[in-house]
Image (cartoon, rainbow, N blue to C red; front, side, top):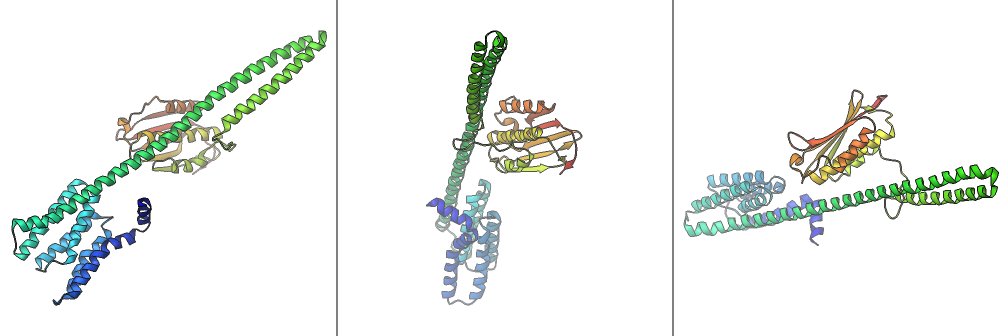
Length: 384
């Protein structure tokens, strides 16, 4: 229920702003129009000047509060009696208290208290009891805004932790699946190596016996055929598991490369930008896959260790005869509990080392973290 209301209000921002101002505007118009005092048009214009800024209170709370307070102060200097529209000061006070930091909320509350005092001066009714009665409204609005702000931040923290836990859970599941596929690959190697060894021995035996003992040679050939079929069936079964990304489908798509970088960056789970400079026009698939995996690992580290609100920048270009990949973030950097010699960096070093390149991953001096890889590749045609 509340989730639907919140989603609806997010889609109709202007309408929600109008609904917030509408009750006070209706009260102001009815009060002024029913009065018999002259100058009703002037009161309506003054009320419009007080209420109009409230349409921007959600996006610019301090500026709206300042504007409403200044109009009210000018009204006091002109000696104009308070109007229902002056309650816009309390509405703007609530917006500041809900959206801004504590120093802003305290300053807005003190300005509102000054407004109560000036109203009493205008009415010549200065007394402690009257000032206390007026202050009750200010303090009530202030405390209500503080409570709503605290609850909003608490709920945002819960949502952020839930999203992070979901991302980490998915990442752990992918890591576990990768570890399992590695284990299966080792099993595949052992099975194939064993069966091929048996086939080689039997083939040698058949070669020796083919002249002296044809029956023994035929038996060895049959065993070779049987062993080969068993090895082929086992290999198909294990390779099918290795290719299987989920329980429902088998993926036979090509390995990712530079063409998939934009999709990777946009779906990384962290705000990230991709900048691609001049790169070789016909880069082999191996270096492309290496670049893709480096960017993937670096963005995963930003998601896991960068902290709330961390952003990343992925840069790809050429420097001489090298392809340079740089992934930087503005996260916690050296304060993050990450290991510079973890499995991710080891994997990146292995991939880059295949092409005689280098890779480094370290905190940045000004904060954040940087992954920098250099791959020496032949620079043929360049494309930007």
